[in-house]
Amino acid sequence: MERGSNRACFSAHTLTHKQHRKPRVGVFGLGLTAFWPQFKGMKARIEQGQRIVEDNLRKLDCEVVSAGVVDCDAAALAAAETLCRAAVDLIVLYLGTYGTGNLALRTIQQRRAPVLVLNLQATPALDYDRANTEDMLVHCSSCVLPEVSHVFARARIGFNLVSGALDPAHPSGAEAWKQIGWWIKAAQVVRNLQTSRIGFLGHTYPGMLDMYSDFTAHHIQLGTHIELLEMCDLQQRVAAVTENEVAAKLEETRRIFEVAKDSPSEPLAKAPSAADLEWSARVAVALDRMVEDFQLDGLTYYYRGVDHNEYEKLGASLILGNSLLTARGIPCAGEGDLKTCFTMYMMDILGVGGSYTEFYAMDLNEQFMLMAHDGPGHIAISDRKPILRGLGLFHGKSGSGISVEFNVKTGPVTILGMTQTADGQLKLIAAEGESIPGPILRIGNTNSRIKFAQPPPEFLAEWTRHGPIHHVALGIGHVIPQIENIARLLNREFAKV
Image (tube, rainbow, N blue to C red; front, side):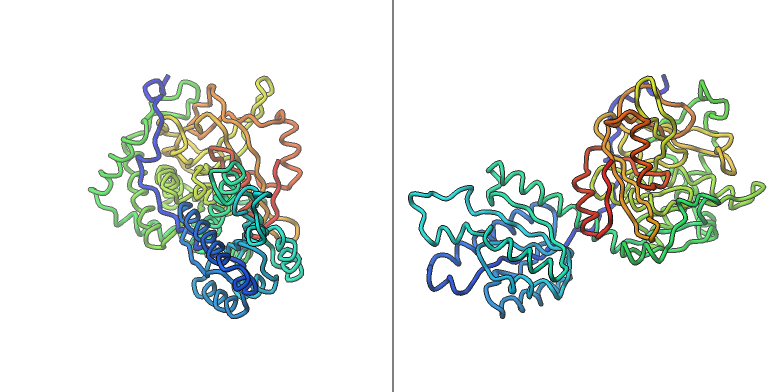
């Protein structure tokens, strides 16, 4: 077997991964000035609770902006100014005790960022034999929760809720802080989407109506910027690549990939020629430069070309460079599929990869889906070295050259798709499954054996009921709760299959 000497896990650390922007989280606690003169130690206890919240949030890899305890109208206005000035991505409202609904509304209605309400009780339970009125008030966050939810509903402010113990050592606290971590990660995804620059090189594969994209809709609904690129932007940079840069890229390629011999099953799949390797490395250097010059966070691309012209040669040589970019956290989706480029980006920020994939075939004997695609893949989520093959043609496309063959490592996986509804709204669809061991096709394509909870016919019936496009991002791990949070923060429809 060609993979026999490469059973060790292929590590993502072999490539320098892009550092995604951290979310900026604004935190304020709720209180009431009427309580402080009545119960002398109460305010200090509420402030201590908020410090615990903020300290634990900082452990979740986010930038924390404290707006203090809001206990009167003046404090609410000051906190609102702090949240607006900091341009926070997520507002965390800690219900330290009872406080009137107007204080919560006054604080957040100017910034209008997504809101996460924390109903984290000071201790798991009151000591009923010894607790006094102050103790009761320190534990009465659940009292104000309905009031806050009523005000937010009438103000059309969507909010999300986590309840449990303040202490992460308590089982309910551990679960609460796990959920809070998911919300912080979702906020990071949204922050990066809303500040992203995605390149669109060439055009969409002709006739693939599911992938045709309304750029304006993506700008409005995701907050992104789409940079329209021409093939001459890439060609200009290819011409400027030096021989030393090509040599360095070839060295990187041989370190990361296994260069295949001829495929035993596909006559079109041959050992890559030295000329094809050199050309793909040259184009990969140019892709790196284009990403840097245009400050791109992702790229979707396709160009048909004709009669072996220069643009056809460029379009056919992008797989190596785009696979390396994807593994570094700059997702590259083929066939001009902008929607899947975004789902790949989301999955990568969640830390689970996100490989460009489609449904190839049903295995009705072993009840799994063969999920694959030609072109680039997220090679950092394989458990073995990816293979480079030379292809005499790319099926359904122009040109020939180097392609990547790999499979996602065995274990839990999630697929994430983005589609567009009849009224033009972007919608997320996800399903969890398992990548299972077994032989895969040796045709120079990414391909994996994915088993879902339902048999393939039933799964496909339910998946297609949501009007998906035919590509998805395939990632490792089960992350549907995090994806659902992303959809809520983006105010996008979400479907779990």
